[in-house]
Image (cartoon, rainbow, N blue to C red; front, top):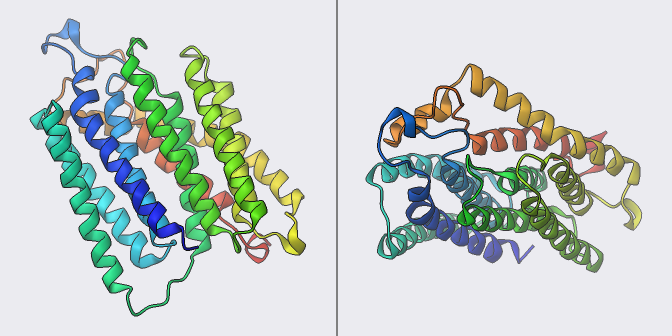
Length: 325
């Protein structure tokens, strides 16, 4: 798929800009005034951190798309994502703010991304490009589940207009990545698949807007419906069409998994993190931010979304009929 490389790199660059905006504009809005106990933040207080982490994951997914799922691109993409998270924590301690800081972080991030892409392209110069359909389908599943997390993210007050803007922008970017990766995983880019991809993208973007339009605390049903539509659409795009038509019974099973799986996996990862593994609190302390009130929990919902997306990839990233058998 010739479109995969430029689109993947462009979307990764857009994710870098989104990350820089989240660091310098959104993050300061989430930090409380003063360290006093009565001002300690509550549940989901550091929503800007989760949006930034999802933007970093989008950078990695964009690189996987640009590399057509090849291992020589996927491994550096994952490594870059891990290093970027560490850099994010270090930069968060400095508390950058303002237009100048936004521009510097965006330009620096794009420079790192461009340097890595240049090295990977140079290493690939003598190797004919191949398509790893399973990896691309898995990346589409991860982006799809992260879309649900970004679309439904909340804050303790639920009054910040910037929260809606950041959530909509992050979710929209992840929708495009999910659809793009699924289309790149298709065995052939037919007119029917391209039309289906365009329709799926529009439907998912409308679904994201509907989720954000619903009052906080009542978003479970629209989120579940959005996940079912997006992830089922990913399978229809990416899987084989023997005889020129999808095997609808396979996609019916995929739809059932897409309906029930994301919510189940998100709960299965969130509950242990709240009770046994204080990962969110560790990141909060490393970034030098105020701890969450003892009555609430510091949950890293972006990590829950990543793990749940990988679990959904294990269920749905089987693009060929032989794999599914």
